[in-house]
Length: 252
Image 1: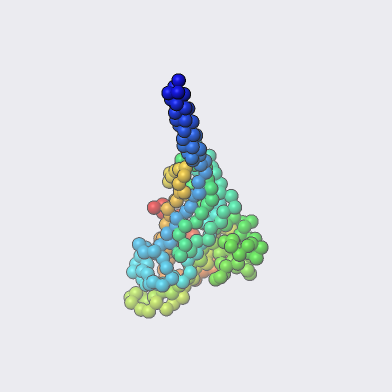
Image 2: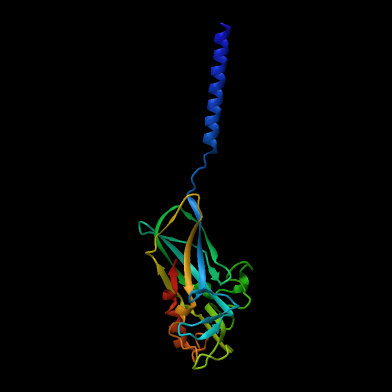
């Protein structure tokens, strides 16, 4: 009788331990997330090189130049789901520069996407807003150096500055200033990667890898004579550059 009691006690103890272990294992199983953080990983490039503010670069034709400012606004980002429906990333504006590569878009639903699209520039309402009304951490706030025309009540969508060798033989000093400041409502451009599929997986933050090549953006610009535009004072040059923006982007 005593042995039966001991055996019963052992079986009961093992059953309790087994139940507790199963319960513990079940409790520790993570619940799959339905959303994950999505970011653009953007390489600002000049030809095959990463852009920076210290190097001397070559144009496609072999002309030497430097870059002292290289920034642009990206907004109106839209993800395209596999069923063709669109998911706008509302309220997200990016101000890119060569020293920063990763730009968070926030949490998005897990799943497969056909592609994405965005605007290089800003919509009209945002473009004509007041930078002083934004928090200092906001890309639309007052920036140093400035990327807003206070006299024109609008942002500079794409700003590139530096110095260039303007000699015909392309063997002179890199000392002549150039600047390209492109803005105004009509100069925003739709950048379309609606067929560049990607997936957002539960438990893994996702990066979409992009590159923007300055040499492509300036591919048909004569840097011996086409040196400056504030957009409205040199509309042909501003238009030429803005029309190159889609080709300057690539998905890596």
